[in-house]
Length: 115
Image 1 (cartoon, helix red, strand yellow):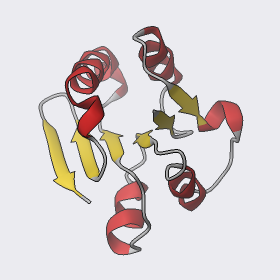
Image 2 (tube, helix red, strand yellow):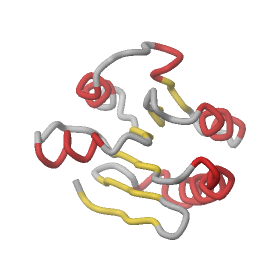
Image 3 (cartoon, rainbow, N blue to C red):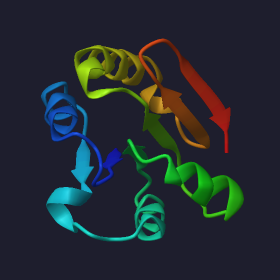
Image 4 (cartoon, rainbow, N blue to C red):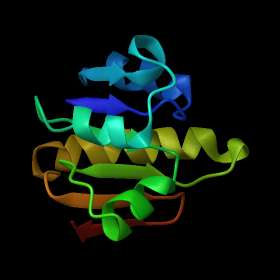
């Protein structure tokens, strides 16, 4: 399951749902909660955080907050269509191997790091 951060473009949430991915949306369910609360929400049941907010890197690597996994999208608004394709392609291939990973996807590459 994917936990979509409030910062995530809503078109991406709709796209993922249309492609059969289970997505829980912070914007729809509990807008305004802190990043730390989102991290806690990702633990039970396990969910991969999907965000455009690079603060999750700070939270995880410097403040040592536990999460199941994170996908961080880095793109300009004009690149949304490219990111849509890259995200769905990536999730179709890796969706069952994302626990314990911090993934950064941009229009040129995908970087996968262990948490």
